[in-house]
Amino acid sequence: MSAHEKINYVEFAAKDLGATKDFFRKAFAWEFTDYGEDYTAFSGEGLDGGFYQADLATSAERRGALIVFYSEGLEETLEKVKKAGAEITREIFSFPGGRRFHFREPSGNEFAVWSDKGL
Image (cartoon, rainbow, N blue to C red; front, side):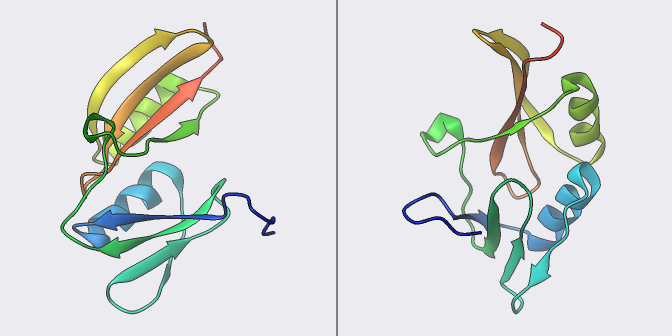
């Protein structure tokens, strides 16, 4: 449900839409709806959004927005994203309130996963 003046949708560039969709299917069991050859959307994943074909990517090191997933089992999620083909850009580290790691999916976009479990 859309809420007035609240974050509703996020879009990411994807160098390889097929590889990006395959990664998120394998790592997190996401489903996609294609809108033509250059756009695919996801919903019900905590925040709705999509990927559009472009030779761009976002990362924290370039001061782009960092989307952070939550996990009740950080080590298990780390193994899932590795198996699905992610590049781990920061191994698990502690910070006040939890632990997290960062990864880059096949199109080069960087995400993070955090947990307050297992501290």
